[in-house]
Every structure is written in structure tokens, then in C-alpha cells.
Image (cartoon, rainbow, N blue to C red):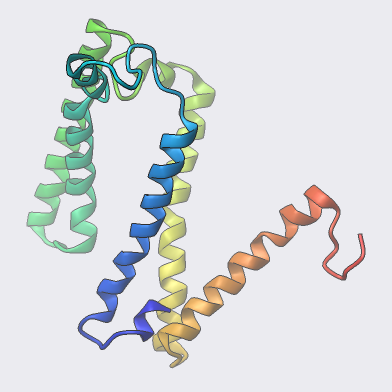
Length: 188
């Protein structure tokens, strides 16, 4: 819908602005609802604050972010041998991230960003694998449908987005029925 607000050269950038209010609300809610870890109470010294920030594992976060970027970038931009090289570099960086997380866990079990011991539990590993495959495919389906509605059927971006919104509302109908006994006809 935001694409209809601007001209052709600026409108697609407006789509990125959707994230700003979502992140702002999420940060406020996180601040209000998440508990403060022991030793990080408000009013503590800056030394304790630095220890709290260090527990976030910024090196691990940068390694994982860089590896995901390098793995996904060839799908978006570089569909060439250079893209294959970028993807391989991303897989290598992912390996470095695994080594880093293991090292962090050896130094302090509470320090790593991801506790890799969880992957020794088969149900966790299988569930994570299924979720990765699911979320790798579902955004693509939304994009394919939107492109089909716009280019294949000749509708505007507003119509394509509203068709996605209708599917979203319809997808909530079944869980809503199950949860509250709603039949959609006004009768329970």
C-alpha cells in the first residue's frame, strides 16, 4: 500500500519505513516487560553496564550477521561465479561463528549467543531444520503471488497487497474458530 503513496523512484523505499514503528514499539515493550538480569539493575555503575553489554556476544552477532549476509546476497544480487564465492565465504564465516560460540561456551556457559549443546537434542535440531526450511520458502511465496497479481494479472501494487491482507485474515479464521468456537456466520 505504501508503494501507491510515492513516485516510482521513491515509493519502494517507503516499504522499509514499515519497520521503524514496529521496532520502536518492540523496544518500548521489551524495556517494560523483560526482567533486568541480576547485576544489571538500573543505577548500577558503568562497569556493570559494560559487563551486561558484553554478555550479548557482539562478536558472535557480527559473525552470524555477516555469514547470513554473504550466504543470501548471491540470491539477491550476484548470480554469477562471484556469488558462489560469496556464498562459500558465508559458509566459512558460519563455521567461524560455530567455533567462536564453542569457545565462548567453554569460557562461560552463559556467554554464547546460542547454546550449541541444544543441537544435540534431536527434537530441537529437527524442529529448527523444519522452521528454517519453512521460513526460507514462505516469504518467497508471498513475493511470487504479489508479482503474479501485478505483472501476470495487470493489477496495481495496492491490489496485490490487499490480496495478501485478505489471505492473512483468512488464515487466522481457522485458529480463531478452534480457539473460541467461532464459525464465521455470527453463531458460535
